[in-house]
Image (cartoon, rainbow, N blue to C red; front, side, top):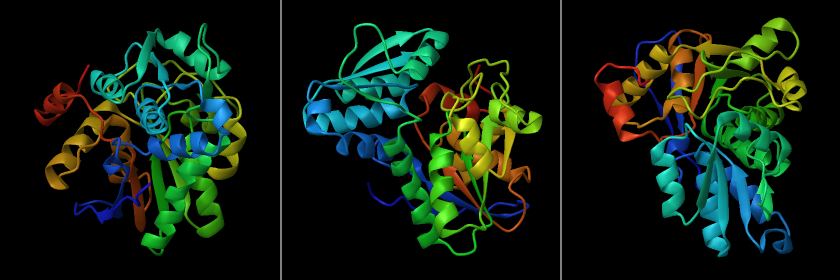
Length: 298
């Protein structure tokens, strides 16, 4: 995958903010890194009959992109609140979508199985090769910028944060890693505060690429080792960060991609040199228009 740009955000803030623009990847999201890593490192016999994943849209596009290159079918099990822009992109890439209620989608991700589906399953979070592919972002950051005090990223399942944090631990161990969640589903923030995994109330929002009701079981141990802190961001602050990125930096970010910027502006990244990973830019046009008018999408 191409190295994504790192640019300075010129804005009044309690820190020096830099943007890692993963929204400029070929599918508009960092997820192409993990999808490519997982499928390309599997034996051809594993994916010859097709590949599938569970995704709200961005990993779906990554898996479909690689499947198209390999000439094999791709299927996506998506939650019923997945944004139309992402589902349309899956169709353009030749993928098939199965839409299910959110609880069914979560169970499918936990179990790695869905009735009637076969082929190579790419777990969007827990696959070691997926996390390794995400970790390349950390290696790139260490080459692109010296003296990074903190890196802020959206936490959905945790594959992005823990993958990047693992790489930074090796090449930039002084850099703090801060996970950002929407207030509508912030289990890591609650779990770190409680000192143990806890479930939280969850409701879908326009921040569809982050937030959940609970941590995937293996992620708690990883988070304790690798994540310095976690913070919950209000939907209002997330929407304002989307608008800020569009109007000040000419960057289109989806809700999850705006969380780190909102958190940095609120001081949750501390002072010094802070990198915000803009993880994706796949936002419905209607939602973006509402945000630019000063609203918060329902």
